[in-house]
Image 1 (cartoon, rainbow, N blue to C red):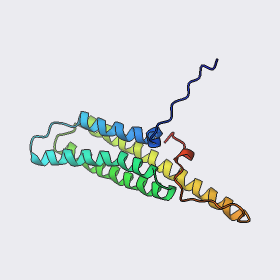
Image 2 (tube, helix red, strand yellow; image 1 turned 90 degrees about the horizontal axis):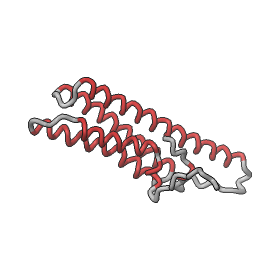
Image 3 (cartoon, helix red, strand yellow; image 1 turned 30 degrees about the horizontal axis):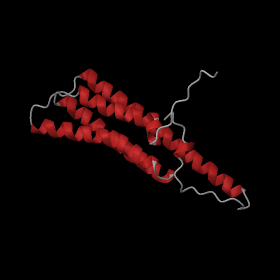
Image 4 (tube, rainbow, N blue to C red; image 1 turned 120 degrees about the vertical axis):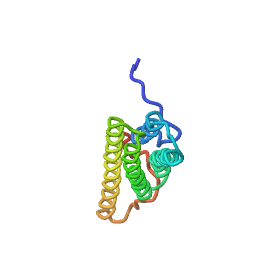
Length: 158
């Protein structure tokens, strides 16, 4: 009897991506670690910060259902949301919603997310260029459709 258990595959394949899990963890972390807003300006900051943190995971989820070029585009939008979170982290620290340790933890989270997304983008680009090279070396017997969504071929370690 085989004792190894395979991880069940999610119906929504983006849920199998480590980068998606990390992004949702960051949103939860923000909610649990940001200080209590004392005025409307701080409440607006917290709402905008949370919204940008959600956008990281939302764009990963949306892009994963698209073709590789579109997925890459959505990943770049996620990186823009990360940069927004860097700004919100600095402002939250400046107005006292984050202490220094929490500010540093937020920046570390965001740097890791940036590296993971960058690696996934490179992986997608390499896959596309390999397929183009294969296509160019063939005698056009087989056509390669680079517009299909193939999250199945993506390494879920991102």
